[in-house]
Image 1 (cartoon, helix red, strand yellow):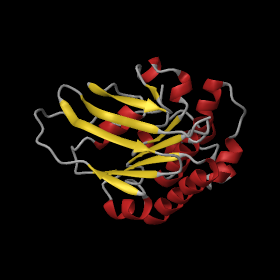
Image 2: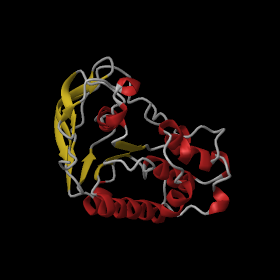
Image 3: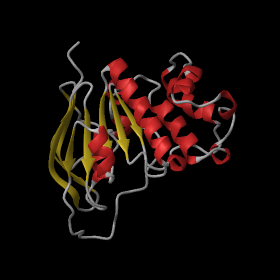
Image 4: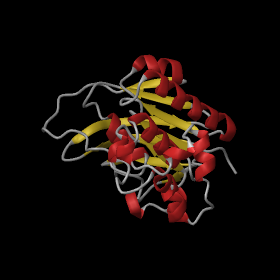
Length: 230
């Protein structure tokens, strides 16, 4: 099998109007590509396009050389499961009715894959007593650990981290970045790390793409982060 490569070619995307224009980048195996930029520059829009959650106005996303022509639930499962996504606000990413164990297992049930919850919880340093709790019963850091475990359940070839550390303290940030680096070393996965924290990206990313600020033509901002890839 050829090396896994995630490519965006001349992507223009937005909602009523473009938010990003003519953006290109490539994430190679084992590489971390950073994306930085001011608020409103389209970082989250780019993340959603590359996670196959939002169809661009123009341009092409390729996964392992295969062009993506359908997005969200219409995207082929074989492509969707190549990508894991970690969003900024874990409390908007997890069904509040679910325990952490159920949240981590959600992709496994959808694909009828073997249960790996205990293995994944150990990987992200979640103790067994936390797995029976719901989102409101744990801290932001503990919940984001569960979200990272969920993102890794199907062993994705690419991990998209969209401002994943915004709600976290420095020690939790360092721990989660360490888990992701270990996962990359073990699997050769590529990572797209989106952050406003350029100091973090200087330490984490192999190189960083800076999105320019722009004057907005309407009042709409990037949409709230939603749950998992459909």
